[in-house]
Image 1 (cartoon, one colour):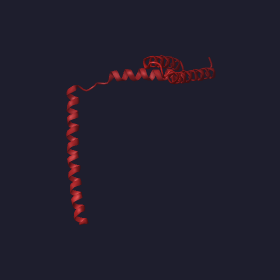
Image 2: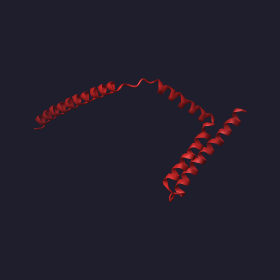
Image 3: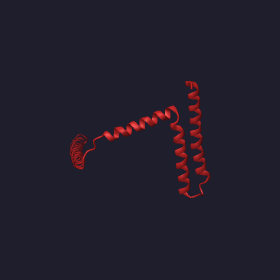
Image 4: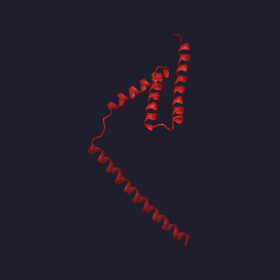
Length: 119
C-alpha cells in the first residue's frame, strides 16, 4: 500500500473516531432520561470502539507504543519506602515553618521600620 493511500485511510479512520465520539455525546444527551448506568456503559463501549479504531492508524499505533514504553519505564522506578517518605515530608514541613517564621519576622521588622518613618 502506498503512503498516500495509507494517509487517506487514516483520515477516514479518524473521521470515524470523531463520528463515534459525536454519536456518544449525542446519544448521552438524547437518552438523558434513561438510567445513568446504561448511559455510562454505552459511553464506555463507544469509547472502546473509538480507541480500537484510533489504534489502527499510524499515529494511534505510535501513541499506543509510547504508552507501552511509559508503562515499562514506570515499572523501573524505585519508589521511596514509607520511612523515606515520612522523613522527607518532615524535612519539608520543618523548612516551611522556618521560612514562615523568617518571613513573619522580616515583615514585622519592615512594618515597624515603616511605621517609624511614616510617624
